[in-house]
Length: 101
Image (cartoon, one colour):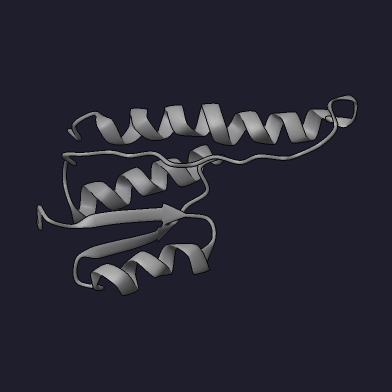
């Protein structure tokens, strides 16, 4: 296992390819993963375990902002914001921060 590798995960293929180009493909693992999906979070954890083992540092930078007038916020837009900014970030940290057994 390479202890100097980086995993970049995200749901937009264009955005997650940039770090691979900048840092070099041998040091960066790029994984398509939607932080609002518990299934994707689990798959990301499985990928990290298989390719890297335990991790030393975790930085979750997932967020979404839906700019709507206060009186026009819908349950759907509220749920998506909460799923990404709170729920997704929490479960990503939970899945990746604990040692794999």
